[in-house]
Length: 254
Image (cartoon, rainbow, N blue to C red; front, side, top):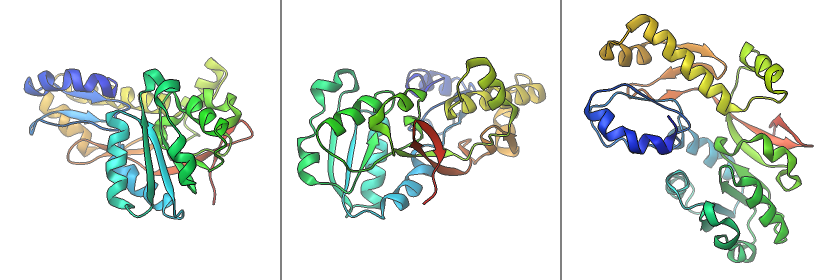
């Protein structure tokens, strides 16, 4: 299930002791002490220190993001990690982007870098930033990755976090053959999650106790690299950066 579905399903499923798989969940409100939620996206907890370390090379950081739990989670984490670097925070409604995003204060603050806490609307946000004469470099998190970004000149130079994918895994070549484009981390995450779940069910059947413990006791080599789960069944795997250069996603090297 996707992160927004997690909020709907989670309470009843947790109370009934059901095993859940959460995909694409940068932020999850785990309100039940005893649950069986397997969270396949590390999100804020793992990424924010890596993101903060990258942003710390700049003195003036502006944040532009949607008014949602995903953006709020990163904003709160970064306020704690690099409080002296953040000079402006602007939020918008992703459903009414052209009307709700006001970049006046961002332009006036003259940031050294802009962190985009945007998802599918990131390309439009980048265009609005450049059309307002703001030339600061752009940075994002993994959820910003969409192949559609490659078609938008305003995203050139965008740097973003990404799992250190095992691009030699068969999944990537098979995806490319089928869809004639490269898979993003979304596809890799979903593919690995379903394969791991299959292996767990092969071992445990419908034994819920066995299923939940299976995730914390096994290392799974997949398209995301070596996936492990902590004691709370939250996945963790290496994080790196990519950059958009000349209309392609490339490994970022400083």
